[in-house]
Image (tube, rainbow, N blue to C red; front, side, top):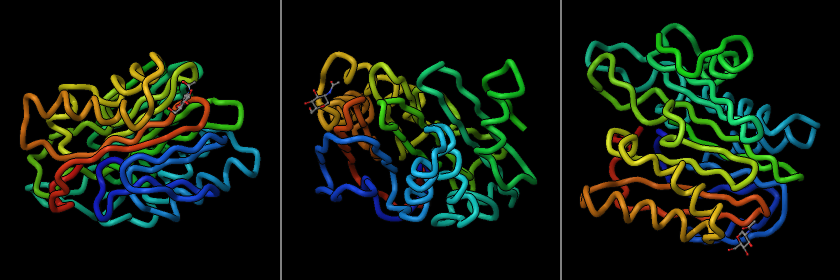
Length: 252
Ligand SMILES: *[C@@H]1O[C@H](CO)[C@@H](O)[C@H](O)[C@H]1NC(C)=O
């Protein structure tokens, strides 16, 4: 889930977890997560098994992290801003309809990704203001993605990271694939790495290579960039690339 903390790894439930940099599988469904938040990934997987949609799986998976306060960087009570308040950012994307629901700077709400879903269902808007990233591809290749975070520790009040920005924190397109990112959000939102990775996969680029290419592009301008991108294509191959793991307190 974009914007969190702890170990960076692609988590894939039900298939053998492969190596850190570049895993290839080719079976569906796939659930991948920017962080090794196992319970969140399992919740997403179980939701699919119980007949839920890909969007349901992303919502429930990221929602699990909001309940568990994964690494303190997702959900309520973590990463206070300079004035001591926790605010939440979240986004969910439907790769069939290309609809996005996003929320930023939410206060007094625990289930930020649930609110983001409601933005799709009940409004005509995309982003409402007031990192955890996940990609789910169902058996038929339908893609959904989402993020949830409480942002960086001691951020300036009002600061919003990449997580609720479609194309930055995550992107989903059932005709090409899905991607999600975590790391230096202020940099990532200028490059839209999740969008670009999906476009590479649309052109047939291998998921691991797609992740690598978007990070190298950022590094040309920001040599000290740190972050990770996870990518999955519609036939179930997936991969990831990461650079310079910092203290997780710096992530969102
Ligand atoms: C997904 O990636 C794998 C591994 O690179 C590749 O063999 C497969 O053709 C790709 N699928 C699509 C739909 O591009």
